[in-house]
Amino acid sequence: MNSSSNLINALFIFVLAGFIGFEVIRRVSPLLHTPLMSLTNALDAIAVVGAIVLVGEHKSTLSAVFGFIAVVAATSNIVGGFLITDRMLKMFKSSRPAAKPAAK
Amino acid sequence: MTGELAGSQVVIELVYLIASVLFILSLKWMSSPTTARHGIWAGEIGMLLAICGTLLHHGIVDYRLIAIGLVLGTIIGVPLGRVAMTAVPQRTALSHAFGALCVTLVGSAEFYLRTPDISRFMMAVLSLEVILGGLTVTGSLMAAGKLQEILPQRPLTYKGQNLVNFLLLAAALAIAITLVLHPEQRSLFPFMILIALAFGVLLIIPIGGADMPTVISLLNGYAGLSAAAMGFVLDSKLLIIAGALDGSSGLILSIIMSKAMNRSFTNVLFGAFGQVQAAGAAGEEARPVRSATPEEAAAILSAANKVIVVPGYGMAVAQAQHKVRELYDALTKRGVEVRFAIHPVAGRMPGHMNVLLAEADIPYDRLIEMDEINGDFPQTDVALVIGANDVTNPAARSDASSPIYGMPILDVDKAHTVMVIKRSMNPGFAGIDNPLYYLDNTLMLFGDAKAFVGSIVRELSGGHG
Image (cartoon, rainbow over the protein chains, first blue to last red):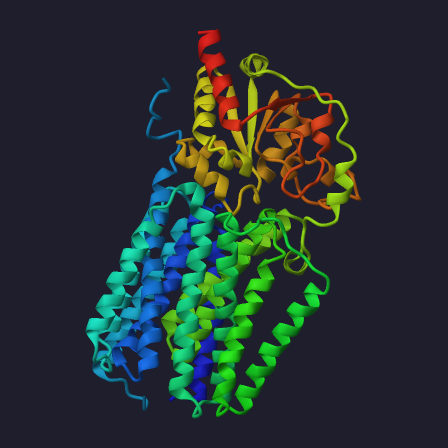
């Protein structure tokens, strides 16, 4: 199933994606480090695709049960992660363009 | 899979490719607050595409259970997305635990489905996946417990701690190697998981609250790496990419955090902080300090031209950020230039202070990083320290015997006047005495941060019109 050329391909992808990640994330403003972490957390929950296949194929009771819990855990990360990241980013406002509501 | 992919498989892979691109764009747009929200949309679309694509997978026979899982996950996820901003660090730790739980469970299921016919490389990656996943599950739960203050926050240490941790890790690796060589010994697998889970607990026990920003970043990195390992096991390029992105993000943040504390990874993980200095700090409480009332503080602040506010975790604990915003408004109205100095490890996770101040409607261009603002303190009339302690401690520059010696700090002591809002003279979280409080240009403002800032605001608006 997994020939050695597949493995080599996977390693290439891993190393290159790691480089992209490093370069892209180095440029993220320290202002946004908290939303960055909640966003990467939501993206990381893409592991749900593995869990979905596990549940859907239903090859054994154990795999279906583990897969089901995994789907629940990952989905809650996706939903919660995107929600809170969006809430946080909405709060970041600049003092320049949109005038701040005047102080009392 | 024999070379040629089936039609639906090609579609799925292409959808995954688009999702990968969207994920990378999503992170790229996080570089600035002006584009960051596009990043979320890109991430959401990518995620939706990937999930829909996966549902096309030809082997899927049971859609009902998948649907129940997705709905249940959404029901749990929505409240987790609506927690208060002060609770974001523990929420983040909890979500690292959930992510790692997913990875560990899928890895375990794959182990029982595939063994004993599994290649050595695959078994090695699978072991890495479940060991990293397992220790991240319990480690993150411990961190969340400490942050939520369900568990004691003081670092817990005992003799031979590092030896125990090392032996546990070695045992887990020994089982992993045995399984690589003899995958038919399936009964060993649960022990490997159990050891990884125990290791995660023991790893976090000696970690104190001040180290949480580093530890959360590190757990973030582990969660990402375990997901990437899962990608290798499932031969999923999308998962490898997402895991690598998350892993490098966690790694970069950990490096930034450890630099900001002048400590190495190993030091954070294998050396508890609160130990050495507890004895030393007790003796020297009697030195004189100068204190001031809210009226005096308000008078000094309104006479100033430039003010820098230095917030710390204490501000979050006292829920003072909205009062701080009122102070910012009152001073800005009087023509005082107010900025905020943000130390990278202020708070309990990377960027924590920025989020709290942004929530209080303070514009983000007023929030300045340490390296950028440190040179401005000598030209600053008042540095107002609210709930920050160690990150302002001049002993880090001058006293080689201090446990925080060498840590980069905010040079508040160089401002013309330093005002420190503090409950009492008790030393801060790490138990280190702060010579800042005894300087001639320092005024101590004793009281609850929220109440004290509130009184200053009243003085400013009432007293002088």
